[in-house]
Image (cartoon, rainbow, N blue to C red; front, side, top):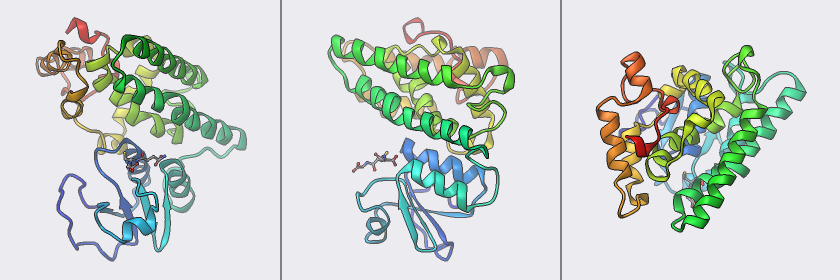
Length: 268
Ligand SMILES: N[C@@H](CCC(=O)N[C@@H](CS)C(=O)NCC(=O)O)C(=O)O
């Protein structure tokens, strides 16, 4: 598998039948990337600059998209369903129709009630819009959390089995625990079930391989910082000095378990 971090396009692997159009910065692409890694699919990373192949695969010009021996599809959740059906390896959807419907329902919930509110809160400048979108986001997350299997059954959405609902939320939760926490005082400690969940997600090689470095994420969104508040700077300093519950408890690298940090950015 080619590395997404090397920005150089190579001709190596041009004969590989699975072409994955993605960017390592795109959380939608990360969903599919996690799915491909979970199933150990042999894929070739492609950049969207590869016209006209890319637009043939994704007519709206959006990432991610997949070309599997000429079968071209786009839209992260649709692509994940395809990956689930076509490739061997651990399933991304459960075998029972009811559980499958539930996973689809809550994956859709992430796209309808979590992702847009994350985006709106990050973009909002005035306190009123921020309060409103924050409430909507917290509500969306609380609903998702309430739909998860009881922890006694296992850490993931369905309990013991990692599934599409887990990998659909994971890239966004990581951004909430880093970017939103640094710039909008998002407090992950309000969601204890999701914190335990994310520890298990982070421990999975398929996620670890795709996760962005928290410091880089925060840096990337530094334009979202309020001009008079140095939240991001203080947050990064906290990371460097290991002032996180995860790093204090386990001596782990700053990249680990951001979703389990209990301090709010204002305390760092
Ligand atoms: N609903 C799509 C959204 C994909 C999306 O918005 N991707 C972004 C990159 S993270 C993109 O391609 N944006 C460019 C554009 O919308 O023109 C999905 O789930 O795949």
